[in-house]
Image (cartoon, rainbow, N blue to C red):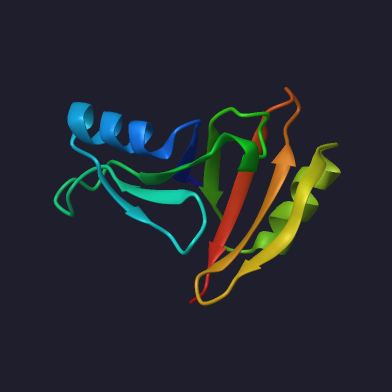
Length: 121
């Protein structure tokens, strides 16, 4: 059963957002590439139930500035077909992240944008 493996929270001010999550929750931040995208480590390796995520510039979000959840799948093309068959709009087509994997985003039956990700194996 595919599960949520990542989240993205939008920010207006990167420094303020990273400081808030570090100060309040102890999250550790690291910038990914040269874009306004900050990976968030939300727990230690000894805490297997949690997921990591990222803070990203609000203008770069797919969900009208809202939170995006990402579901891990083992066959991205098959799941793109499944959500399409269910009447959902593909918002972002299959997109490669070199050396990491690929993703696609869709708008669900309630209007939420949800991501799907398949890692390189």
